[in-house]
Length: 330
Image: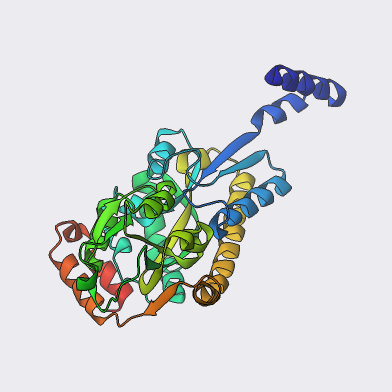
């Protein structure tokens, strides 16, 4: 009934303004944009800003945003894009290296020093090469680079930690790709693959002992309600990519493509600014307002353990070591 009414309204509008209106109506296209991030997080709110920019531009595109893996389960978005079942997602580095193993080092622990270092790399020749490789080998166009935050370890029950050996046996939730699980090993934990929407209840019931995420996501997902301690490991300064199906993108007009690029840039830059500002104060709020234990620790032993784990990994043998060393300044 709704579709019939919509068609009738379109026909009435075409009669009133001339039959030439019908092709324009037919050309309107929907861009579905999926993320595992929660609705309250800056990343999703940046996606909404992109959607609003596209709507305001009025170029025959509508961006629909879907948080919390509500449209596609986390980890299935990229294959859905490649099958033509989804237009956009917030693609993470492990989803790239799963198909282009030479870029696996982007998921390495302690790769980037900080936000400025990450953005410098992503906006330079290495970032340009990444974008070209993803377009050619995956059929996906990167529209913008967003900052997902600096990831920290959080535990359900507090403990004293001075090095990786103190985390032995800790069941730490990780996304399910090999790169993430290897990162967990570099931290000394027992990496436990789990989708993001399942984490809160798993912490609540004790199915896992902890998780690792940027503090802004930790806060937005309300993990502080089921955690006692945050360890400031800063083990990953994480980029995430506003990514779109290249065949879909290439079929758009130049104007539509530019509007999507501009919207992605606006949404990503807003996310980056807001997340950075929030990260500067969230740790203090976790202590002063929520009573969590937040520990700054000497990371020397973690650096050494990470180097040893990656040096002995078969997975890391496939990485582009030259590019990785350029990023790390080695």
